[in-house]
Length: 517
Image (cartoon, rainbow, N blue to C red; front, side):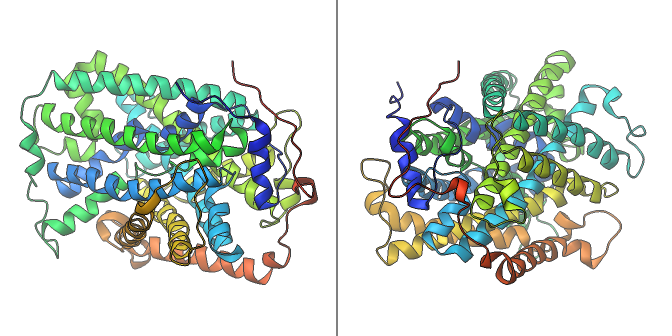
């Protein structure tokens, strides 16, 4: 049984450390925060979206990137769990970096995470194209799928519909979002367990399949290691977003106790269930030869192993998982924009930080995030390599944002400035080694992901240097341009908006508790 909420007064009082008063309504219980974290990670969305890329790049042995990424990200998640226990606040990445480092580092972390979240919404929404046409060719609205730009253009159309849906749901309030998200996560978890069981009864080869490289290291500068590092993008794409549980802290009951648990449970559950899905898919597919696995991915495996009827039923569950994943990413992006605007750290902050009295949610950031995610899609509408380019850039920026939290946290530990929350989750004496590993992992994986490989960023024609270096140019431009704007303009305006500032000497103790029915 989860611990009962301790009361909204203590939760709201914790915001005074940041100078805020409670402006969002607390309605989310422990399962809702867990659902937010695991729906952002989304086992079925991530594994089904990039399995084809991982297999094509590294063969069956790419599976080992799954436990590798989990080990690194679990170190990050442990750091975040400690932070969530101490500071369960909206816009977690932004506020944590600001608290641990300084306002400049906080702004850069928030800016990178905000842009990354917008790009990630577009990346997740693109997963509709990888699944819907497999269910029925009627969902291929643009051409017949054989034209040069048919798939990319249709992907943008389907993704736009999903982004419109997530925008409307988030605009109508956190209660509606939580109900849809929780129902979707519950169904996704059941579907994942069922899929694991069905694949297990159809295995045709042993687990030693994960030792086969299928010759994928040929032609790579570092042999199979080079291929493996490219393939690891497929696993890196799945295991992030666990901080969302903490980002909803101002709308949760007893967040300092529930958020750390949600962060860790989300990543562990995703690792176990996702790892089994990938392993059993390799063990049960009828043949490892041919190009189906490297072009159609897990969608092909499901139809091949389960047949058209059960296979398509499972693909509908994947569609639901993609939907709630996009919804969770959109929700997290809105909370981040709200948190930065509350500190007057975005243009038009007063409007962006306004909470609708009717829906209890920041409506303008919700709409703006949706519009910008659509713009990301439209810019890439005629690019066949849209899937890996958009997802690759999104992952790089999120890993950088995470590094801007774990790095300052390590400095704070070394200087003796970090104190975990008393009586809440704490790493104790393991804090320093875990934090060191989290920083080393984040730096190494960021470098691996942003490296200008043609196989990731310019795998198909047209071949131009600026496409291959697209991630470096985009991420560098966003970071440099954004920080230049902040330094020259926005930092001179920074300060908590009056309507969100805590009442001295303490915030109001009036609780705002109402559990979802």
